Length: 71
Image (cartoon, helix red, strand yellow):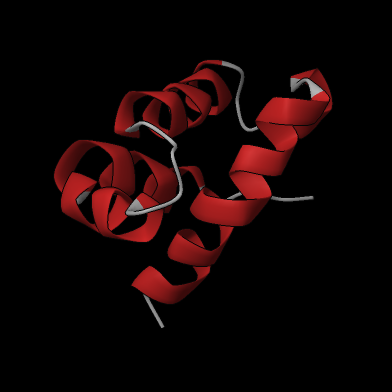
């Protein structure tokens, strides 16, 4: 899976409000989702390094936001 790291960086640094809206009412904390995004940025987008829970968080919140943010 190829992740657009530029879009991910913008999302977690400048569009945190989008993350907060996406997780509202789910019980997730913004810092959890942002932490997964930061981990991916630090590891050049290598999703193979994510745990199952981190991967689920990425696929549930970050991936849709990345795909939506620049269409």
